[in-house]
Length: 427
Image (cartoon, rainbow, N blue to C red; front, side, top):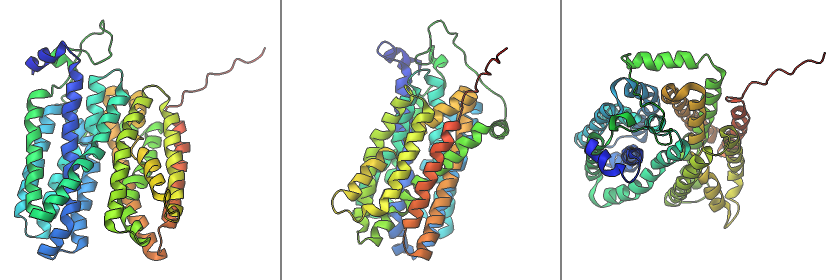
């Protein structure tokens, strides 16, 4: 790895190569997480499994993906980023390949729910936060935006290709393609991903040249790190403000729009292909919006950015039921407006967590905040479905989701707010 550092060190900082490797890891994990959605119908036809049974495996996958965050960040502190990632990627590739042999529902729950869900949870936002805080002193927001956007890019790159493979060759070929992608990323991590800048005799990008080169390590158990950090952070007001605002973020994105938009389009006479195309268009705009959000978080107050993100998202969700009644500009306008804001909240949220808890504890704290995001997603997915079943429409769910975003816009203004200096009293 030192040879790679020497080779590119004359041109640019090795941290940018680290970002490229992690981007590919996140890309592969995002494609893996998206795979069950294209396998659902073929599995239903071949084995006669109910949609609910297949959805149970996907639900376990989503839950573990969120809950693994703080423990993955703690494991990276204890054992290192590279060993943790290698184990996760190996488990991911093995689990996906093994699923080609499954014939019973419990096997899908065990493989795609537990093995794949847990391993993709390691290659997630906590990994991004760990790499950004270790390798960058400046441009942290921009780098976090780039890495966060990889999840949208992964779906854009993989879903159309995987759907075409399923249509022409069947679901088992999809499994082998995804397993091969995960396996290809393994040597990149093994040979090109140092633990810290000090391992290649560098300082974090943007750190002053006279700053000492340090490398911190811990011998503490990862479970103790994760729960100890939670115990520390949960005693502060800022943690709960971050947690509940990100809970609303998950509820208004993955939970509501990501889960129910295609079904909502069906209520208005649109086909599943049209609904999926709308989501794909939103993913394209999300790629630009999240990267831009990272750039903005390096230059502007993160609280103010989050205020605008949540506020504008809330207004767009309240507009959504009316968009179906506008012939030409209705849904495209929503796709552009909402897509740019889909996960733009991540870079400023990471920035605030780092400012409050420091760059060593921030990845673990953010892992717990991401767990809140996934709990919000589960809450909205279930709640919106129940409202649709009882009322026959998604309008009320849209209004509630939009209203929660407006609440989040107010909450975030209180995060890491500097205390007012006491005013001198007149004699």
